[in-house]
Length: 386
Image 1 (tube, rainbow, N blue to C red):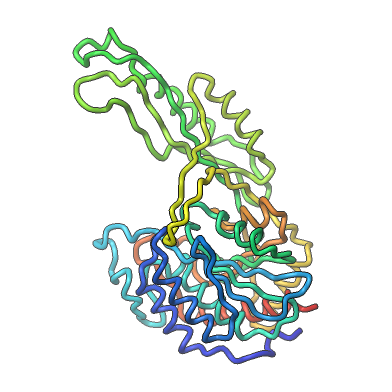
Image 2 (cartoon, rainbow, N blue to C red):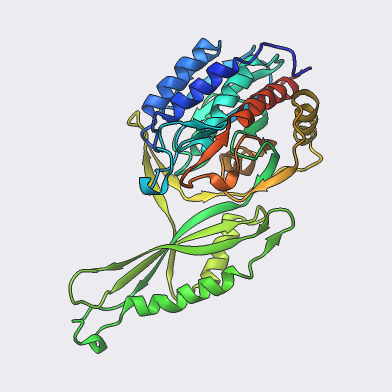
């Protein structure tokens, strides 16, 4: 099916919509206002729109058939950090020389606008569902998996809208977060010899983590796994007292071949003198809905010779003028659910340089957003063809 068929994309309105998205802050758990904007825009474009208990906005196009093509993006973004590091206000959505500045422009409101408009203009066969999810920055994949399972979607292919510089991503490393604890005995800080300092017991563990991180197993395409300490706390931690407990948080990046069981075994062998637990946390959505999430998100890699990869490359090149390269992401995405857990053939495509995500002066080319919309239109037409 020809991706040039279907409706014309209203490019000026799409860019104005993108500016409205960026001008509406939507930190994780606080996506209510941007969800309202998205739902309103999708309805105006002809989608059948609903919102679930988490607050995810779900837009449908086409007649529901045996299979569904899923386009997935997220509504939330990270904080802007110190505004002193920005040359443009992070929520002004200012356009300078064809470049739009703002928090979330790359990750991933530029892609969200392009996806919504591109899929709305496509001529489709199978049903196309566009999921705009909450809390991705905190717990990627959780909301997307909930949509697929609770909506009973039989997804034939999934396109993730994270930034790729208009290339085609076919995978990523996974990640998990561990808490490691050492225990000691308190004493007065003036008499440390009477206690056992839990910090000192943690020091060799941190050194071992640093050493091992540089020689972890590699995946030929996605590169090596890694692990790094991201936080440290001691208790009691107040006053002249030797701490009897020290905790570190460890971010572990996983190649797709690694299961949680394998990682837990490796961690126990690597750190026999510390208590290790997988971190869990409770997410509270803007709707009031709460869910507990284990911080384990598996890696994934889609076969380059699969139908979804071949058709995506062909449709992007033939119908949108884009000649994408095949890449992998350094960061984690909702693909941990679609491909990593559910085994759905998954690819990623979107405007913007991935290295600008979460950075000050985050920005995206307006021209690339337009090209991305044409690309999403082509993908929706090609992948949904029956």
